[in-house]
Image 1 (cartoon, rainbow, N blue to C red):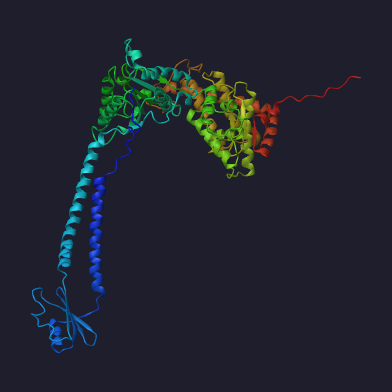
Image 2 (spheres, rainbow, N blue to C red; image 1 turned 135 degrees about the vertical axis):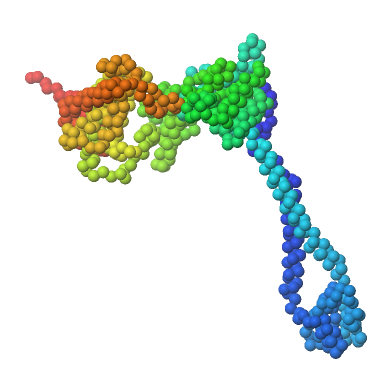
Length: 625
Protein backbone atom coordinates (compact mmCIF):
# COMPACT_ATOMS: atom_id res chain seq x y z
CA UNK A 1 0.00 0.00 0.00
CA UNK A 2 1.34 3.44 -0.93
CA UNK A 3 2.28 6.01 1.66
CA UNK A 4 -0.09 8.90 1.21
CA UNK A 5 1.15 12.38 2.28
CA UNK A 6 -1.00 14.04 4.93
CA UNK A 7 -2.08 16.92 2.66
CA UNK A 8 -2.60 14.85 -0.45
CA UNK A 9 -6.36 14.93 -0.26
CA UNK A 10 -6.71 18.44 1.11
CA UNK A 11 -7.87 20.12 -2.07
CA UNK A 12 -9.44 23.02 -0.21
CA UNK A 13 -6.07 24.34 1.01
CA UNK A 14 -4.57 26.62 -1.69
CA UNK A 15 -1.04 28.14 -1.64
CA UNK A 16 -0.92 31.92 -1.25
CA UNK A 17 -0.84 33.85 -4.55
CA UNK A 18 2.25 36.03 -4.06
CA UNK A 19 2.03 37.52 -7.53
CA UNK A 20 -1.48 38.73 -6.98
CA UNK A 21 -0.53 40.13 -3.57
CA UNK A 22 2.41 42.11 -5.03
CA UNK A 23 0.24 43.64 -7.76
CA UNK A 24 -2.31 44.63 -5.15
CA UNK A 25 0.46 46.25 -3.09
CA UNK A 26 1.75 48.27 -6.08
CA UNK A 27 -1.71 49.55 -6.96
CA UNK A 28 -2.40 50.48 -3.37
CA UNK A 29 0.92 52.32 -3.04
CA UNK A 30 0.29 54.28 -6.26
CA UNK A 31 -3.11 55.28 -5.01
CA UNK A 32 -1.72 56.47 -1.69
CA UNK A 33 1.10 58.53 -3.32
CA UNK A 34 -1.32 60.19 -5.73
CA UNK A 35 -3.67 60.99 -2.89
CA UNK A 36 -0.84 62.57 -0.88
CA UNK A 37 0.24 64.76 -3.82
CA UNK A 38 -3.28 65.92 -4.51
CA UNK A 39 -3.89 66.53 -0.84
CA UNK A 40 -0.64 68.53 -0.51
CA UNK A 41 -1.46 70.69 -3.51
CA UNK A 42 -5.00 71.35 -2.34
CA UNK A 43 -3.74 72.04 1.17
CA UNK A 44 -1.31 74.68 -0.06
CA UNK A 45 -3.97 76.29 -2.21
CA UNK A 46 -6.48 76.31 0.64
CA UNK A 47 -4.10 77.69 3.27
CA UNK A 48 -2.63 80.41 1.03
CA UNK A 49 -4.70 83.59 1.73
CA UNK A 50 -2.43 85.99 -0.26
CA UNK A 51 -4.37 88.33 -2.55
CA UNK A 52 -3.87 87.74 -6.24
CA UNK A 53 -3.33 90.81 -8.44
CA UNK A 54 -2.19 91.40 -12.05
CA UNK A 55 1.53 91.40 -12.71
CA UNK A 56 1.28 95.10 -13.57
CA UNK A 57 0.25 95.84 -9.99
CA UNK A 58 3.37 94.05 -8.76
CA UNK A 59 5.56 96.16 -11.04
CA UNK A 60 3.78 99.41 -10.06
CA UNK A 61 4.13 98.82 -6.33
CA UNK A 62 7.79 97.97 -6.81
CA UNK A 63 8.46 101.11 -8.82
CA UNK A 64 6.67 103.25 -6.17
CA UNK A 65 9.05 101.90 -3.51
CA UNK A 66 6.21 100.27 -1.54
CA UNK A 67 7.91 96.83 -1.44
CA UNK A 68 10.22 95.29 1.12
CA UNK A 69 10.56 91.75 -0.24
CA UNK A 70 10.24 90.03 -3.61
CA UNK A 71 9.82 86.20 -3.66
CA UNK A 72 10.02 84.18 -6.84
CA UNK A 73 8.77 80.56 -6.64
CA UNK A 74 8.59 79.12 -10.12
CA UNK A 75 6.03 81.20 -12.01
CA UNK A 76 4.65 82.83 -8.85
CA UNK A 77 5.86 86.26 -7.80
CA UNK A 78 5.00 87.39 -4.27
CA UNK A 79 5.49 90.99 -3.14
CA UNK A 80 5.59 92.04 0.52
CA UNK A 81 4.45 95.64 1.01
CA UNK A 82 5.72 98.04 3.63
CA UNK A 83 2.31 97.86 5.27
CA UNK A 84 2.91 94.13 5.88
CA UNK A 85 0.37 92.92 3.32
CA UNK A 86 1.28 90.50 0.60
CA UNK A 87 0.16 90.33 -2.99
CA UNK A 88 1.02 87.79 -5.63
CA UNK A 89 0.79 87.29 -9.34
CA UNK A 90 1.99 84.93 -12.03
CA UNK A 91 4.59 85.47 -14.75
CA UNK A 92 5.52 83.57 -17.85
CA UNK A 93 7.99 80.75 -17.38
CA UNK A 94 10.30 82.37 -19.95
CA UNK A 95 10.41 85.74 -18.12
CA UNK A 96 12.83 86.51 -15.33
CA UNK A 97 12.61 89.18 -12.63
CA UNK A 98 15.05 91.35 -14.55
CA UNK A 99 12.90 91.12 -17.69
CA UNK A 100 9.99 92.46 -15.65
CA UNK A 101 12.08 95.23 -14.09
CA UNK A 102 11.89 93.65 -10.66
CA UNK A 103 15.36 93.89 -9.23
CA UNK A 104 16.74 95.39 -6.05
CA UNK A 105 17.74 98.97 -6.72
CA UNK A 106 18.22 99.71 -3.00
CA UNK A 107 19.01 97.76 0.09
CA UNK A 108 15.42 98.26 1.29
CA UNK A 109 14.11 95.54 -1.07
CA UNK A 110 15.27 91.94 -0.73
CA UNK A 111 14.92 89.40 -3.52
CA UNK A 112 14.48 85.64 -2.86
CA UNK A 113 14.43 83.15 -5.72
CA UNK A 114 13.49 79.51 -4.93
CA UNK A 115 14.83 76.74 -7.21
CA UNK A 116 12.03 74.09 -7.37
CA UNK A 117 12.84 72.71 -10.77
CA UNK A 118 13.34 69.16 -9.49
CA UNK A 119 10.15 69.27 -7.41
CA UNK A 120 8.12 70.43 -10.36
CA UNK A 121 9.75 67.82 -12.54
CA UNK A 122 8.91 64.92 -10.24
CA UNK A 123 5.45 66.29 -9.52
CA UNK A 124 4.69 66.41 -13.23
CA UNK A 125 6.14 62.93 -13.72
CA UNK A 126 4.08 61.41 -10.87
CA UNK A 127 0.87 63.20 -11.81
CA UNK A 128 1.17 61.94 -15.39
CA UNK A 129 2.51 58.40 -14.83
CA UNK A 130 0.47 57.26 -11.82
CA UNK A 131 -2.90 57.41 -13.64
CA UNK A 132 -1.40 55.21 -16.39
CA UNK A 133 -0.16 52.77 -13.74
CA UNK A 134 -3.63 52.58 -12.22
CA UNK A 135 -5.24 52.01 -15.63
CA UNK A 136 -2.71 49.31 -16.56
CA UNK A 137 -3.20 47.62 -13.17
CA UNK A 138 -6.97 47.67 -13.62
CA UNK A 139 -6.67 46.13 -17.09
CA UNK A 140 -4.31 43.47 -15.74
CA UNK A 141 -6.77 42.66 -12.96
CA UNK A 142 -9.63 42.32 -15.46
CA UNK A 143 -7.56 40.01 -17.68
CA UNK A 144 -6.68 37.90 -14.66
CA UNK A 145 -10.36 37.55 -13.73
CA UNK A 146 -11.20 36.53 -17.31
CA UNK A 147 -8.43 33.92 -17.24
CA UNK A 148 -9.67 32.66 -13.89
CA UNK A 149 -13.24 32.28 -15.16
CA UNK A 150 -11.93 30.47 -18.23
CA UNK A 151 -9.99 28.02 -16.07
CA UNK A 152 -13.04 27.42 -13.89
CA UNK A 153 -15.04 26.68 -17.02
CA UNK A 154 -12.49 24.04 -17.99
CA UNK A 155 -12.64 22.58 -14.45
CA UNK A 156 -16.43 22.36 -14.60
CA UNK A 157 -16.16 18.70 -15.53
CA UNK A 158 -13.99 17.83 -12.55
CA UNK A 159 -15.37 15.47 -9.94
CA UNK A 160 -16.91 16.98 -6.81
CA UNK A 161 -16.42 13.86 -4.72
CA UNK A 162 -15.55 14.31 -1.06
CA UNK A 163 -12.32 12.54 -0.25
CA UNK A 164 -11.63 10.96 3.13
CA UNK A 165 -8.04 9.86 3.49
CA UNK A 166 -6.81 7.08 5.70
CA UNK A 167 -5.13 9.63 7.94
CA UNK A 168 -8.50 10.79 9.25
CA UNK A 169 -10.61 9.07 11.90
CA UNK A 170 -12.77 6.70 9.89
CA UNK A 171 -15.69 4.49 10.77
CA UNK A 172 -15.02 0.90 11.82
CA UNK A 173 -17.25 -2.15 11.85
CA UNK A 174 -17.46 -1.76 15.63
CA UNK A 175 -19.34 1.51 15.01
CA UNK A 176 -21.97 -0.36 12.97
CA UNK A 177 -24.44 -2.29 15.11
CA UNK A 178 -27.31 -4.56 14.17
CA UNK A 179 -26.05 -5.42 10.67
CA UNK A 180 -24.07 -8.57 11.38
CA UNK A 181 -25.03 -10.43 8.19
CA UNK A 182 -24.28 -7.40 6.03
CA UNK A 183 -20.91 -6.93 7.70
CA UNK A 184 -20.02 -10.55 7.02
CA UNK A 185 -20.64 -9.99 3.31
CA UNK A 186 -18.31 -7.01 3.32
CA UNK A 187 -15.48 -8.71 5.22
CA UNK A 188 -14.29 -10.24 1.95
CA UNK A 189 -14.15 -6.79 0.35
CA UNK A 190 -12.03 -5.52 3.23
CA UNK A 191 -9.72 -8.53 3.02
CA UNK A 192 -9.26 -8.00 -0.70
CA UNK A 193 -8.31 -4.34 -0.28
CA UNK A 194 -5.78 -5.32 2.38
CA UNK A 195 -4.40 -8.42 0.64
CA UNK A 196 -5.19 -8.27 -3.10
CA UNK A 197 -2.36 -10.65 -4.05
CA UNK A 198 -3.95 -13.37 -1.93
CA UNK A 199 -6.86 -13.52 -4.40
CA UNK A 200 -5.18 -12.64 -7.68
CA UNK A 201 -2.51 -15.33 -7.31
CA UNK A 202 -5.13 -18.07 -7.23
CA UNK A 203 -6.97 -16.58 -10.21
CA UNK A 204 -9.84 -14.83 -8.41
CA UNK A 205 -11.21 -11.70 -10.06
CA UNK A 206 -11.65 -8.42 -8.28
CA UNK A 207 -15.21 -7.77 -7.11
CA UNK A 208 -15.91 -4.61 -9.05
CA UNK A 209 -19.06 -3.37 -7.37
CA UNK A 210 -21.23 -3.79 -4.29
CA UNK A 211 -24.84 -2.59 -4.31
CA UNK A 212 -26.38 -1.92 -0.89
CA UNK A 213 -30.18 -1.91 -0.91
CA UNK A 214 -32.41 -0.86 1.96
CA UNK A 215 -34.94 1.65 3.27
CA UNK A 216 -33.75 5.14 4.27
CA UNK A 217 -31.86 5.41 7.54
CA UNK A 218 -30.84 1.76 7.81
CA UNK A 219 -27.08 2.41 7.60
CA UNK A 220 -26.14 1.99 3.93
CA UNK A 221 -23.68 4.89 3.91
CA UNK A 222 -22.36 3.86 7.32
CA UNK A 223 -21.56 0.38 6.02
CA UNK A 224 -19.63 1.81 3.06
CA UNK A 225 -17.56 4.06 5.30
CA UNK A 226 -16.88 1.16 7.64
CA UNK A 227 -15.44 -0.82 4.73
CA UNK A 228 -13.09 2.06 3.92
CA UNK A 229 -12.13 2.43 7.58
CA UNK A 230 -11.41 -1.25 8.04
CA UNK A 231 -9.42 -1.47 4.81
CA UNK A 232 -7.56 1.76 5.70
CA UNK A 233 -8.10 2.97 2.15
CA UNK A 234 -9.02 6.34 0.59
CA UNK A 235 -12.77 6.82 0.39
CA UNK A 236 -14.32 8.88 -2.46
CA UNK A 237 -17.91 9.80 -1.62
CA UNK A 238 -20.34 11.41 -4.06
CA UNK A 239 -24.09 11.55 -4.61
CA UNK A 240 -25.65 10.41 -7.85
CA UNK A 241 -27.30 13.79 -8.37
CA UNK A 242 -23.91 15.57 -8.42
CA UNK A 243 -23.09 14.02 -11.79
CA UNK A 244 -26.03 15.54 -13.63
CA UNK A 245 -25.80 19.19 -14.73
CA UNK A 246 -27.56 21.41 -17.25
CA UNK A 247 -24.58 21.20 -19.66
CA UNK A 248 -24.27 18.16 -21.90
CA UNK A 249 -21.30 15.92 -21.17
CA UNK A 250 -20.49 17.29 -17.72
CA UNK A 251 -21.72 14.18 -15.90
CA UNK A 252 -19.65 11.83 -18.05
CA UNK A 253 -16.60 14.07 -17.60
CA UNK A 254 -16.99 13.99 -13.83
CA UNK A 255 -17.29 10.22 -13.88
CA UNK A 256 -14.03 9.95 -15.81
CA UNK A 257 -12.25 12.32 -13.45
CA UNK A 258 -13.56 10.48 -10.37
CA UNK A 259 -12.38 7.09 -11.58
CA UNK A 260 -8.99 8.49 -12.60
CA UNK A 261 -8.45 9.88 -9.10
CA UNK A 262 -9.49 6.60 -7.54
CA UNK A 263 -7.10 4.64 -9.75
CA UNK A 264 -4.20 6.96 -8.89
CA UNK A 265 -4.86 6.39 -5.18
CA UNK A 266 -5.63 2.67 -5.32
CA UNK A 267 -6.45 0.62 -3.39
CA UNK A 268 -9.46 2.86 -2.83
CA UNK A 269 -13.24 2.88 -2.62
CA UNK A 270 -15.74 4.90 -4.63
CA UNK A 271 -19.08 5.33 -2.88
CA UNK A 272 -22.03 6.57 -4.97
CA UNK A 273 -25.01 7.38 -2.78
CA UNK A 274 -28.50 7.36 -4.31
CA UNK A 275 -27.22 5.85 -7.54
CA UNK A 276 -30.78 5.71 -8.86
CA UNK A 277 -30.40 9.44 -9.71
CA UNK A 278 -28.20 8.45 -12.69
CA UNK A 279 -28.73 4.69 -12.90
CA UNK A 280 -32.37 4.56 -13.97
CA UNK A 281 -33.52 2.38 -16.83
CA UNK A 282 -32.47 3.91 -20.15
CA UNK A 283 -34.81 4.67 -23.00
CA UNK A 284 -37.56 6.30 -20.91
CA UNK A 285 -39.12 2.99 -19.88
CA UNK A 286 -38.16 3.44 -16.24
CA UNK A 287 -39.96 5.53 -13.67
CA UNK A 288 -39.43 9.23 -14.34
CA UNK A 289 -38.89 9.07 -18.13
CA UNK A 290 -35.74 9.42 -20.22
CA UNK A 291 -32.95 11.98 -19.90
CA UNK A 292 -30.07 12.18 -22.40
CA UNK A 293 -27.52 13.68 -20.00
CA UNK A 294 -28.36 11.12 -17.30
CA UNK A 295 -28.09 8.28 -19.82
CA UNK A 296 -24.69 9.50 -21.01
CA UNK A 297 -23.49 9.63 -17.42
CA UNK A 298 -24.75 6.08 -16.83
CA UNK A 299 -23.00 4.91 -19.99
CA UNK A 300 -19.74 6.36 -18.72
CA UNK A 301 -20.16 4.61 -15.35
CA UNK A 302 -20.75 1.30 -17.13
CA UNK A 303 -17.68 1.85 -19.29
CA UNK A 304 -15.43 2.77 -16.37
CA UNK A 305 -16.51 -0.28 -14.36
CA UNK A 306 -15.81 -2.52 -17.33
CA UNK A 307 -12.42 -0.87 -17.77
CA UNK A 308 -11.03 -2.09 -14.47
CA UNK A 309 -8.17 -4.54 -14.60
CA UNK A 310 -6.96 -6.96 -11.96
CA UNK A 311 -4.34 -4.55 -10.70
CA UNK A 312 -6.53 -1.51 -10.21
CA UNK A 313 -7.74 -2.36 -6.68
CA UNK A 314 -10.69 0.05 -6.87
CA UNK A 315 -14.13 -1.05 -5.69
CA UNK A 316 -17.39 0.80 -6.31
CA UNK A 317 -19.99 0.70 -3.56
CA UNK A 318 -23.42 2.11 -4.39
CA UNK A 319 -26.50 2.59 -2.24
CA UNK A 320 -30.15 2.99 -3.18
CA UNK A 321 -33.64 2.49 -1.80
CA UNK A 322 -35.11 2.15 -5.32
CA UNK A 323 -33.55 -0.98 -6.82
CA UNK A 324 -36.48 -1.61 -9.15
CA UNK A 325 -35.71 1.45 -11.32
CA UNK A 326 -32.02 0.64 -11.94
CA UNK A 327 -30.84 -0.24 -15.44
CA UNK A 328 -30.33 -3.96 -16.08
CA UNK A 329 -26.85 -3.32 -17.50
CA UNK A 330 -25.82 -1.82 -14.18
CA UNK A 331 -26.99 -4.87 -12.25
CA UNK A 332 -25.42 -7.58 -14.37
CA UNK A 333 -22.48 -9.67 -13.07
CA UNK A 334 -19.14 -8.00 -13.71
CA UNK A 335 -20.36 -4.60 -12.59
CA UNK A 336 -22.22 -4.88 -9.31
CA UNK A 337 -21.26 -8.44 -8.37
CA UNK A 338 -22.56 -8.26 -4.82
CA UNK A 339 -25.98 -7.17 -3.59
CA UNK A 340 -26.46 -6.60 0.11
CA UNK A 341 -29.95 -6.00 1.48
CA UNK A 342 -30.19 -3.96 4.67
CA UNK A 343 -33.51 -4.31 6.51
CA UNK A 344 -34.96 -2.46 9.45
CA UNK A 345 -33.29 -3.71 12.67
CA UNK A 346 -35.02 -6.31 14.82
CA UNK A 347 -35.34 -6.11 18.60
CA UNK A 348 -31.84 -7.42 19.37
CA UNK A 349 -30.28 -5.19 16.71
CA UNK A 350 -32.11 -2.13 18.06
CA UNK A 351 -30.62 -2.80 21.50
CA UNK A 352 -27.11 -2.87 20.05
CA UNK A 353 -27.72 0.29 18.02
CA UNK A 354 -28.95 2.14 21.11
CA UNK A 355 -25.81 1.08 22.97
CA UNK A 356 -23.59 2.37 20.15
CA UNK A 357 -25.29 5.77 20.06
CA UNK A 358 -25.03 6.09 23.85
CA UNK A 359 -21.23 5.82 23.94
CA UNK A 360 -20.54 9.54 24.11
CA UNK A 361 -23.48 10.31 26.40
CA UNK A 362 -23.87 10.18 30.17
CA UNK A 363 -26.35 7.35 30.63
CA UNK A 364 -27.79 6.28 33.97
CA UNK A 365 -26.85 2.77 35.06
CA UNK A 366 -30.55 1.96 35.51
CA UNK A 367 -31.38 2.48 31.83
CA UNK A 368 -32.71 -0.72 30.25
CA UNK A 369 -32.06 -0.65 26.51
CA UNK A 370 -33.96 -3.92 26.06
CA UNK A 371 -37.13 -2.22 27.23
CA UNK A 372 -36.52 0.73 24.92
CA UNK A 373 -35.94 -1.69 22.07
CA UNK A 374 -39.36 -3.25 22.64
CA UNK A 375 -40.94 0.21 22.43
CA UNK A 376 -39.37 1.02 19.05
CA UNK A 377 -40.60 -1.54 16.49
CA UNK A 378 -40.10 -0.32 12.95
CA UNK A 379 -37.47 2.25 13.94
CA UNK A 380 -34.43 2.53 11.68
CA UNK A 381 -30.88 3.14 12.86
CA UNK A 382 -31.25 6.85 12.09
CA UNK A 383 -34.46 6.96 14.15
CA UNK A 384 -32.72 5.34 17.11
CA UNK A 385 -29.85 7.82 16.88
CA UNK A 386 -32.44 10.59 16.93
CA UNK A 387 -34.06 8.98 19.99
CA UNK A 388 -30.80 9.14 21.95
CA UNK A 389 -30.15 12.71 20.85
CA UNK A 390 -33.65 13.82 21.86
CA UNK A 391 -33.28 12.11 25.23
CA UNK A 392 -30.06 14.05 25.84
CA UNK A 393 -31.87 17.29 24.99
CA UNK A 394 -34.73 16.43 27.36
CA UNK A 395 -32.28 15.64 30.17
CA UNK A 396 -30.35 18.86 29.56
CA UNK A 397 -33.55 20.93 29.75
CA UNK A 398 -34.18 19.51 33.23
CA UNK A 399 -30.55 20.28 34.25
CA UNK A 400 -30.06 16.57 34.84
CA UNK A 401 -26.51 15.22 35.09
CA UNK A 402 -27.37 11.99 33.26
CA UNK A 403 -29.92 10.55 30.87
CA UNK A 404 -32.53 8.44 32.62
CA UNK A 405 -35.00 5.81 31.44
CA UNK A 406 -37.91 8.24 31.52
CA UNK A 407 -36.01 10.69 29.29
CA UNK A 408 -35.48 8.05 26.61
CA UNK A 409 -39.11 6.90 26.81
CA UNK A 410 -40.31 10.49 26.37
CA UNK A 411 -38.07 10.91 23.34
CA UNK A 412 -39.49 7.69 21.82
CA UNK A 413 -43.03 8.98 22.27
CA UNK A 414 -42.08 12.36 20.83
CA UNK A 415 -40.56 10.82 17.69
CA UNK A 416 -43.26 8.16 17.23
CA UNK A 417 -46.36 10.27 17.91
CA UNK A 418 -45.19 13.89 17.96
CA UNK A 419 -44.71 16.34 20.84
CA UNK A 420 -47.38 16.88 23.44
CA UNK A 421 -49.72 19.83 22.86
CA UNK A 422 -50.91 20.68 26.34
CA UNK A 423 -51.83 24.16 25.16
CA UNK A 424 -54.50 22.66 22.89
CA UNK A 425 -57.27 22.84 25.46
CA UNK A 426 -60.48 20.86 25.01
CA UNK A 427 -63.80 21.65 26.60
CA UNK A 428 -65.23 19.14 29.05
CA UNK A 429 -67.54 17.52 26.47
CA UNK A 430 -64.73 17.00 23.93
CA UNK A 431 -62.45 15.71 26.66
CA UNK A 432 -65.00 13.06 27.67
CA UNK A 433 -65.60 11.99 24.06
CA UNK A 434 -61.84 11.66 23.50
CA UNK A 435 -61.40 9.68 26.73
CA UNK A 436 -64.16 7.18 25.91
CA UNK A 437 -62.84 6.91 22.36
CA UNK A 438 -59.27 6.02 23.42
CA UNK A 439 -60.40 3.64 26.17
CA UNK A 440 -62.65 1.93 23.60
CA UNK A 441 -59.58 1.18 21.48
CA UNK A 442 -57.60 -0.11 24.44
CA UNK A 443 -60.41 -2.20 25.98
CA UNK A 444 -61.23 -4.05 22.75
CA UNK A 445 -57.53 -4.75 22.13
CA UNK A 446 -57.08 -6.03 25.68
CA UNK A 447 -60.04 -8.43 25.43
CA UNK A 448 -58.96 -9.87 22.07
CA UNK A 449 -55.84 -12.03 22.64
CA UNK A 450 -54.48 -11.59 19.09
CA UNK A 451 -54.09 -7.83 19.51
CA UNK A 452 -50.83 -6.26 20.70
CA UNK A 453 -50.66 -5.31 24.40
CA UNK A 454 -51.66 -1.78 25.41
CA UNK A 455 -48.63 0.33 26.25
CA UNK A 456 -50.19 3.71 27.00
CA UNK A 457 -53.52 5.53 26.80
CA UNK A 458 -53.51 9.33 26.79
CA UNK A 459 -55.93 12.17 26.10
CA UNK A 460 -53.10 14.70 25.75
CA UNK A 461 -53.03 15.96 22.19
CA UNK A 462 -50.08 14.85 20.04
CA UNK A 463 -49.59 15.89 16.45
CA UNK A 464 -52.98 15.95 14.71
CA UNK A 465 -54.61 13.55 17.19
CA UNK A 466 -56.62 14.66 20.21
CA UNK A 467 -55.68 11.46 22.03
CA UNK A 468 -53.41 8.47 21.60
CA UNK A 469 -53.63 4.75 22.32
CA UNK A 470 -50.26 3.09 21.91
CA UNK A 471 -49.85 -0.64 21.34
CA UNK A 472 -46.51 -2.46 21.46
CA UNK A 473 -45.91 -5.98 20.15
CA UNK A 474 -44.16 -8.37 22.50
CA UNK A 475 -41.84 -9.48 19.71
CA UNK A 476 -41.01 -8.63 16.11
CA UNK A 477 -43.47 -10.10 13.63
CA UNK A 478 -42.90 -10.85 9.98
CA UNK A 479 -46.03 -12.80 9.08
CA UNK A 480 -49.66 -11.84 9.78
CA UNK A 481 -52.69 -14.11 9.49
CA UNK A 482 -56.36 -13.39 8.88
CA UNK A 483 -57.22 -13.50 12.58
CA UNK A 484 -54.60 -10.82 13.36
CA UNK A 485 -55.98 -8.49 10.70
CA UNK A 486 -59.57 -8.89 11.90
CA UNK A 487 -58.51 -8.30 15.51
CA UNK A 488 -56.68 -5.09 14.61
CA UNK A 489 -59.72 -3.90 12.66
CA UNK A 490 -61.97 -4.55 15.67
CA UNK A 491 -59.59 -2.56 17.87
CA UNK A 492 -59.69 0.32 15.39
CA UNK A 493 -63.50 0.27 15.53
CA UNK A 494 -63.47 0.34 19.34
CA UNK A 495 -63.25 4.16 19.52
CA UNK A 496 -66.27 4.81 17.30
CA UNK A 497 -68.30 2.06 19.00
CA UNK A 498 -67.53 3.49 22.48
CA UNK A 499 -68.81 6.92 21.41
CA UNK A 500 -72.00 5.35 20.04
CA UNK A 501 -72.68 3.29 23.20
CA UNK A 502 -72.07 6.15 25.67
CA UNK A 503 -73.33 9.22 23.79
CA UNK A 504 -75.73 7.67 21.27
CA UNK A 505 -73.94 9.29 18.33
CA UNK A 506 -70.49 9.39 16.72
CA UNK A 507 -68.03 12.21 16.05
CA UNK A 508 -65.41 12.97 13.43
CA UNK A 509 -62.63 11.63 15.68
CA UNK A 510 -62.85 8.16 14.13
CA UNK A 511 -62.11 9.23 10.54
CA UNK A 512 -58.52 8.00 10.62
CA UNK A 513 -59.57 4.74 12.29
CA UNK A 514 -62.10 4.05 9.53
CA UNK A 515 -59.52 4.81 6.86
CA UNK A 516 -56.96 2.42 8.36
CA UNK A 517 -59.54 -0.35 8.86
CA UNK A 518 -60.79 -0.01 5.27
CA UNK A 519 -57.22 -0.14 3.98
CA UNK A 520 -56.53 -3.37 5.89
CA UNK A 521 -59.75 -4.92 4.62
CA UNK A 522 -59.00 -3.99 0.99
CA UNK A 523 -55.51 -5.48 1.20
CA UNK A 524 -56.97 -8.67 2.66
CA UNK A 525 -59.26 -8.98 -0.35
CA UNK A 526 -57.07 -7.73 -3.23
CA UNK A 527 -53.51 -8.61 -2.16
CA UNK A 528 -53.56 -11.42 0.40
CA UNK A 529 -56.34 -13.60 -1.02
CA UNK A 530 -58.22 -13.74 2.30
CA UNK A 531 -61.70 -13.47 0.80
CA UNK A 532 -63.69 -16.72 0.73
CA UNK A 533 -66.05 -15.37 -1.90
CA UNK A 534 -63.34 -14.33 -4.39
CA UNK A 535 -60.62 -16.80 -3.49
CA UNK A 536 -56.80 -16.64 -3.70
CA UNK A 537 -56.62 -14.09 -6.51
CA UNK A 538 -54.60 -10.85 -6.53
CA UNK A 539 -56.33 -7.79 -7.97
CA UNK A 540 -54.72 -4.50 -8.97
CA UNK A 541 -51.36 -3.80 -10.58
CA UNK A 542 -48.93 -1.76 -8.51
CA UNK A 543 -47.12 1.18 -9.98
CA UNK A 544 -43.38 0.62 -10.41
CA UNK A 545 -40.58 2.81 -9.15
CA UNK A 546 -41.73 3.20 -5.58
CA UNK A 547 -39.37 3.70 -2.68
CA UNK A 548 -38.83 0.71 -0.45
CA UNK A 549 -41.67 0.68 2.05
CA UNK A 550 -43.73 3.26 0.14
CA UNK A 551 -46.79 2.40 -1.94
CA UNK A 552 -47.55 4.81 -4.79
CA UNK A 553 -50.90 3.19 -5.60
CA UNK A 554 -52.32 0.50 -7.86
CA UNK A 555 -54.02 0.28 -11.21
CA UNK A 556 -57.27 -1.59 -11.69
CA UNK A 557 -56.83 -4.66 -13.89
CA UNK A 558 -60.21 -6.24 -13.23
CA UNK A 559 -63.76 -5.85 -14.49
CA UNK A 560 -66.59 -3.77 -13.05
CA UNK A 561 -68.26 -6.96 -11.85
CA UNK A 562 -65.29 -7.87 -9.70
CA UNK A 563 -64.96 -4.27 -8.56
CA UNK A 564 -68.44 -4.49 -6.98
CA UNK A 565 -67.61 -7.85 -5.39
CA UNK A 566 -64.40 -6.42 -3.91
CA UNK A 567 -66.27 -3.44 -2.48
CA UNK A 568 -68.89 -5.73 -0.95
CA UNK A 569 -66.21 -7.94 0.62
CA UNK A 570 -64.34 -4.95 2.06
CA UNK A 571 -67.55 -3.55 3.50
CA UNK A 572 -68.45 -6.94 5.00
CA UNK A 573 -65.06 -7.23 6.75
CA UNK A 574 -65.34 -3.73 8.23
CA UNK A 575 -68.90 -4.31 9.43
CA UNK A 576 -67.85 -7.63 10.95
CA UNK A 577 -65.10 -5.85 12.91
CA UNK A 578 -67.58 -3.18 14.01
CA UNK A 579 -70.01 -5.77 15.35
CA UNK A 580 -67.21 -7.57 17.19
CA UNK A 581 -66.14 -4.35 18.91
CA UNK A 582 -69.76 -3.50 19.73
CA UNK A 583 -70.35 -6.87 21.43
CA UNK A 584 -67.17 -6.55 23.52
CA UNK A 585 -67.83 -2.98 24.71
CA UNK A 586 -71.50 -3.68 25.42
CA UNK A 587 -70.50 -6.62 27.61
CA UNK A 588 -67.78 -4.59 29.42
CA UNK A 589 -69.56 -1.23 29.55
CA UNK A 590 -68.98 -0.87 33.30
CA UNK A 591 -65.25 -1.45 32.81
CA UNK A 592 -65.27 1.11 29.99
CA UNK A 593 -66.77 3.74 32.29
CA UNK A 594 -64.46 2.84 35.16
CA UNK A 595 -61.27 3.15 33.12
CA UNK A 596 -62.47 6.34 31.43
CA UNK A 597 -63.18 7.96 34.79
CA UNK A 598 -59.59 7.26 35.87
CA UNK A 599 -58.20 8.49 32.55
CA UNK A 600 -60.04 11.80 32.91
CA UNK A 601 -58.32 12.31 36.26
CA UNK A 602 -54.76 11.40 35.24
CA UNK A 603 -54.92 12.20 31.49
CA UNK A 604 -52.42 9.34 30.87
CA UNK A 605 -52.47 5.65 31.86
CA UNK A 606 -49.42 3.48 31.35
CA UNK A 607 -49.49 -0.28 30.78
CA UNK A 608 -49.36 -1.18 34.47
CA UNK A 609 -52.12 1.24 35.44
CA UNK A 610 -54.32 0.00 32.61
CA UNK A 611 -53.73 -3.68 33.41
CA UNK A 612 -54.59 -3.12 37.08
CA UNK A 613 -58.28 -2.81 36.15
CA UNK A 614 -58.33 -6.45 35.01
CA UNK A 615 -56.55 -8.14 37.91
CA UNK A 616 -58.75 -10.56 39.88
CA UNK A 617 -59.81 -9.39 43.33
CA UNK A 618 -58.51 -11.72 46.00
CA UNK A 619 -61.06 -12.62 48.67
CA UNK A 620 -60.03 -12.74 52.30
CA UNK A 621 -59.80 -16.23 53.73
CA UNK A 622 -62.19 -16.95 56.64
CA UNK A 623 -61.22 -19.35 59.40
CA UNK A 624 -63.67 -22.18 60.12
CA UNK A 625 -64.77 -22.54 63.65
